[in-house]
Image (cartoon, rainbow, N blue to C red; front, side, top):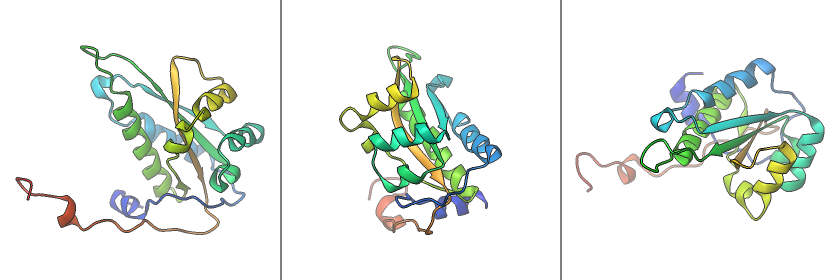
Length: 173
């Protein structure tokens, strides 16, 4: 699938996945896409934990009780680290956003579905609980988890506002 097709086909999958593993080759491609994302001042503040162990997957689903989490054969935990790159500035949020988008597009291009679960991950004590389950050092924040797999039922991208409603040429309106 080419790049623009992957953008058009990417959608947020909230359903159940098939009991089909993500191959190690595909998992590495997906994670490499995250690593290759742009990073402010090349701070590279984003790290990843790829989880395929069934016991760990169950523990994660115990924290975030959603069908896509319960049935995902792969969950990618996305970690950020606040690193000052200049004048008290850190780009951890921007770095993480770019990395997640690359991962979502790579997963789509390889025929998988995923979901950016930022809100559920950061809700209440979920981030801390996930960090404990995954043995994440205190200097990192578990920013989100991304369940990845082959969906039982295909979905589609929700409708977007018209180009003219969101893009202005030269000046606003």
